[in-house]
Length: 199
Image (tube, rainbow, N blue to C red; front, side, top):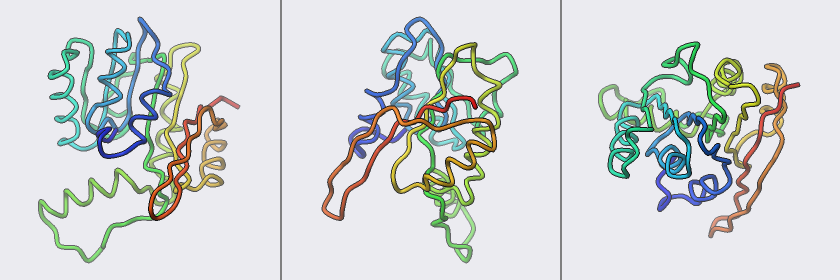
């Protein structure tokens, strides 16, 4: 999740996401760790934050330590659920997804550290063909406690129809739980919290 001073989505999702008091919470794509740290402060006993980017994972670890919850927040680096074991299960799994279906990447860009950084930034926003969403829909069921909830942060920059189709292919139906519209100089942006229900 992005820093709350940089985007209203972080503030919205932090208030919208239900935190299971005394329970377990997993954030995919933790970024700065804002949601993961908030979940620990809101009463979750066990929190796991996962990010594919080493810099983001380190940011999350440092913020958990800075805000006094490193004893409850485990930070892992990896792609989606790959760092977890089959025994890792949660009451709530949340992902503020990379909802932009197109890619910003430049295939002619030079290689090296700067290109690697740009590629990670691209992954944070873009998911061509919703391949990453497919991984999420395919893997999340294996990491839910009985009665566990799956929540997705989404915006109208994403492809609603493709999301619905891909989710249903993997046995899920996305249902809107909260919505808000932000008004900006270049237009409006709709933020949504979706819950994935089994079908």
